[in-house]
Image (cartoon, rainbow, N blue to C red):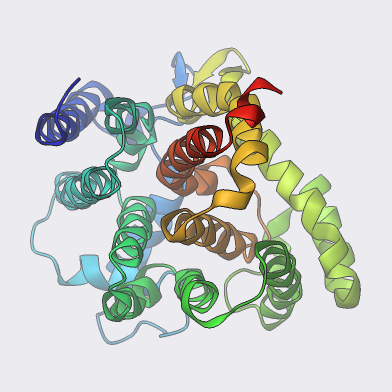
Length: 360
């Protein structure tokens, strides 16, 4: 059996491998703008969002950005950075935050004394290769979420609170994530079930109010699809918004786990292809995790509760956005890895404390 020190070294080796893989992906993709419908691969990078942020940089000075524009922070940061080749600069920035994400994930596994499999799972979140290219918020978001979980597990809540500053700059919904995470973890004494229902109920109504204020996104950008239709319905009937939460959660599961179907319109969807390893693993873990939850639900410790609150808080923040995109779901993946590992451990502890339960 590997010692904790050996597992930690192995974990850091996985992080280095991810960084090297990102560089190879960067070389393989080359100039993402050259990709067209004639290629075998589609969506090799988040070109659409990159163009939006790049236009902000080109047409606005550092002092012309609107503070409550959700494109403000990322554009402001790149506006201040040196370098003319935006693809090289963005790759360097993304790899920097990939390194932070990887190091903190390994530290979480080390702190919780998780098995070697948990250290290895970071390799399955291959969406980081997609996030390593061009200007995007997702890599920084991933680093912020994992940092919040790590500091929460260390009970360093002041550090979690300080994450509000970069969270507000990068993706303003993350402020809600941090506020919810801290409130659930250190303020409320209610049950897990009550806190979960309350959080998603408040989130559903708040999301509609935010949409009405058009702080994050315009209603015109939602399109005429099913997601746009249900969002418009609850926009017109905000009091009913909590009843739409299960539907939106289900749509997110379909969007993410549907990534296993990587072939679309005669091309391989690179975004889905890179989400597929984590999606397949988590699909296979659903019955195991559910069984572990049933066995160990009476034995949850503080670390498991904090991880659970981190998980539902980031999901609630994602639901503030009326759009549904599997890309947003990927920030949940490392937290899910840790949560499932802790569920399994708790289930084993429950079996040890009550041997009769294991035989039933």
